[in-house]
Length: 91
Length: 108
Image 1: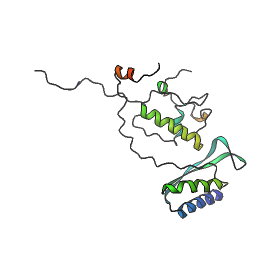
Image 2: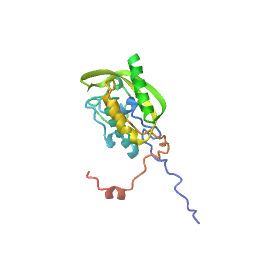
Image 3: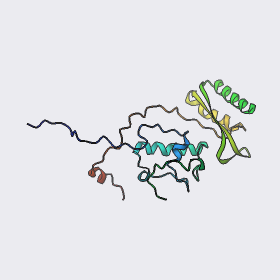
Image 4: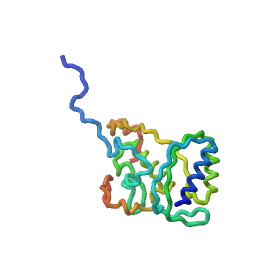
């Protein structure tokens, strides 16, 4: 008689890049990695590949950083231009 | 630098007057602002960033924003809720079945 059990060969759930990292409006470096270096616009979910929650948190944090004067709006801070690429974009 | 100290002292005293409990005051450094800010008929390029940890009733917010708006040395003011460190249970990207994808009606 076969025993009922859940699939033992299941992969662990896929994690996005920020799974487990708390997003803050103060760390401009992390936020600038999800912003275009030419226009300063925030990348969409199909480019960043983040889960729902984290994408929402990142957009809110970026908008906050814009308003409070932590992050530039129309471009990416040149200090952070050479950061490792997290987004799935080809220039 | 003594001016910044005076500004901070003024704000903290005003906060304590209205009955706020100041827990912590952090200096996030002085840097060039990401964009030039015009405030009180002056174009500012450099600024000092300070973060004050507060505990106060919500009726404190509007009078304090007024008060800080009248202060010439304060360029930008804001109140934020204290972020509760609760986001440790990120379960990762859950797989969505194709039926749910059709039901969500995304125009693609």
